[in-house]
Amino acid sequence: MVKIQYTDMTEKERQDISDALKRYCELDTLAMVMIYEHLKSIVK
Image (cartoon, rainbow, N blue to C red):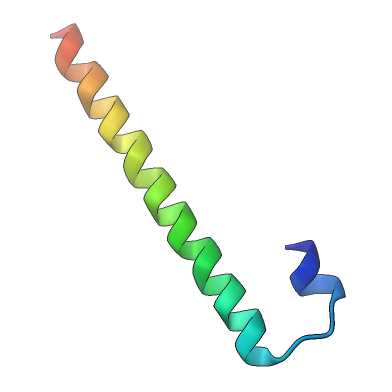
């Protein structure tokens, strides 16, 4: 996020970075849920 805060860039560049970070977080969260579900199924 530092680049967004301290670098001169267009609003489109700023939005592109923000969208990419949101997508990354979405996929990261999905991966954690999949791992959790898998571990939960092993424990049963």
